[in-house]
Image (cartoon, rainbow, N blue to C red; front, side, top):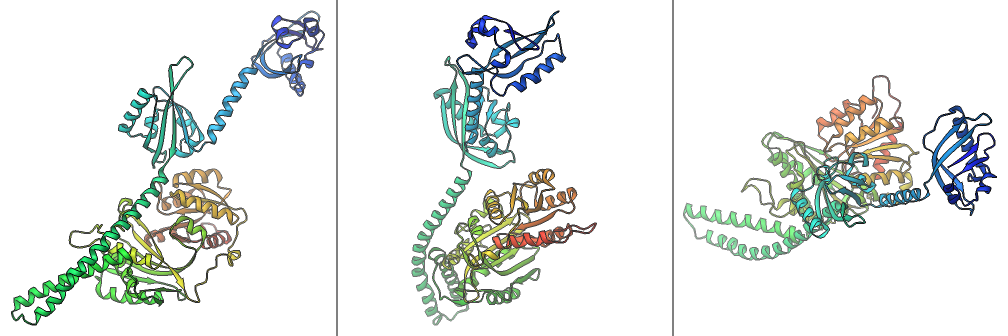
Length: 618
């Protein structure tokens, strides 16, 4: 405590605690002024605060500070306290009561530094009380789960993350018995997405050795698990392929004598019943031989004669065959450019690929029928596309596409469709080798396949085969400078696939754009409502789990009728396209697409003339 003159700031009295804290003798203190104790730069703050004190004479002011003061030995301390005026018949004095908060500030700064370091961690770091309520939630947890710290704190960790109850019981027992537990847990994000984490739980004790909290560190394994599943699926296919190859060769040796013997027996059989039985034997053996050939094609990629082919001729021949054999309620449409590139391949095998896909498309739409689109296009695969498709190789490709408007497939079914002997058809109507054979043929042509499907909407298969011949020249590298560049325009990217969002952001930034991302329509609306003046284009996927692209476009039009939108989709039905066009969307990108297509679409959209009243641009 001390008192000083209001006008001169001369110390008038000082207690023993201040003498001990600052290191000055009483006589030294009483010869000094307040500004001599203040640290450099504090004078202006003191003057401003004195004015407030003078205006409230006779009042005790609340906690003030912090102030930086210098002690006699030169070190600085941080203090805070209360000032009050003491009116006098001569000159008013000000009494100050101070607390040294230097140590507390150091602890607080150390705590803040530790928090900053924890926030730098990519893992989700969570602290819970013994009852399970969350008391700490770092930025890694915000990024992983989607809840902010304000939303998470105070909530039970079990309810917030929808932990597996059975696993949770095991976790709690492990923590109680040994003080720690680690293992995999299945949890939910704020958006309802499934997460797989490697979770480590540790019991934390206080200085007295009593348990006070639980430290939880969660590492996201979701993408790793997906890659592991893909790797195991590949290994499984290779193993089945090796087994199937051996079985197929043995079956060929069994079937060959049956077919040859049936031909010999036919010469000596004279009865109608005998002829009928031989016919059954021959047709069954030949059908078995056909299945064996499919197995061999899947297992080893049986090589045929490779010649230079024009895919549009394959499409033309296939459309004629299908038009004669498919029911009349199936409308087969073909699409391809006049300058379609050529490929090197086996015409018979590629016919088989298209036939298998078209037959599956037909079956998916029966008995109602519908439209099958058999199309082809040129595509120069660039690094942007290759990032999203590990099997892709850079350079010119011809893309064969088969699209149907059938029942579609779930994610679980799509994960198995290329497995041999897996089929969704009724018993006796499918061998389960069709798509396995397609995969084997495409791989022997050094190509790859992508599939997009949506329940109730339909399915699209794309076959990518390296192009060859004089017309197929890659523009990657030598032609990269011709790709239009942005000028810092802000693009809102909306897609529920994290890998696609990341690839798009990197591509946009490399070509002169800025990007915000949203994982579904509701996120996109929130971002757009705050940044509508900055966002120049919205690039959205059509099929998303929470709010799809169609609903998003409708909502965006209500917020801003002039918003420019590009819609991308791996499978867009004509009805959806017509609805989007009615909403003013004129620019569509078929997934997957190259960086050059994206940049050209952005350039066209941004260059579009300002809309007239009542109209909306794409």
